[in-house]
Image 1 (cartoon, rainbow, N blue to C red):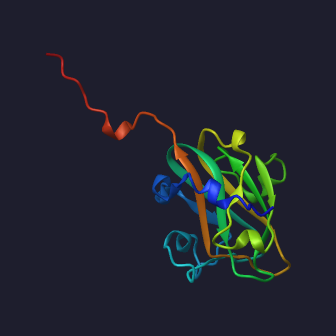
Image 2 (image 1 turned 60 degrees about the vertical axis):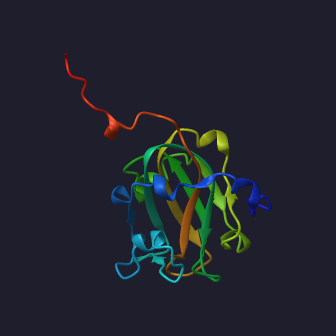
Amino acid sequence: MSSPAAAKTRQYGDLKEAISTKDCYCLNEDPNKPFGNLFMGDETLTLKSDADEQLMLYIEFQDAVKVFSLNIVAPKGDEAPRVVKLYVNRPNLGFSDAGDVEPTQTIELSEEDLLPENDVELRFVKFQRVKNITVFVEENNGADETVISSLKFFGERLAGTNMNELKKISDE
């Protein structure tokens, strides 16, 4: 699933600034290796699962975005994610729901896909008006826990009304 066209997809910007980190969360994270580590910019700070290999990451964007690709970085070995399911605009999706809901896209990751320079291209037409993405790490390569060093989304913000910039017009 590796994308030799990583340079092509990188023409789109990193959507880090579009993520509403205060509204993001992760289910089944190790409290000593929490979800917030993914946004620190330091790949030595990792996210690690707790009870088993599965992770459910909920990413909320400030405004609707188009997502073209994602970049998942993980250490080599059995703890690296292997099967990832993406769900667009499905807030509050839990582990028990994931089996009943059709994912927007399922990705089987190779060791090469998990390198910092390789992006995984998404089915662009399915990621057009994304307000949130749920990333379900369903399987790793056989370990009891899953470890992720970095998670980035590449795309563009959609033009829209920023409700924070609206001002009342007086009746004069």
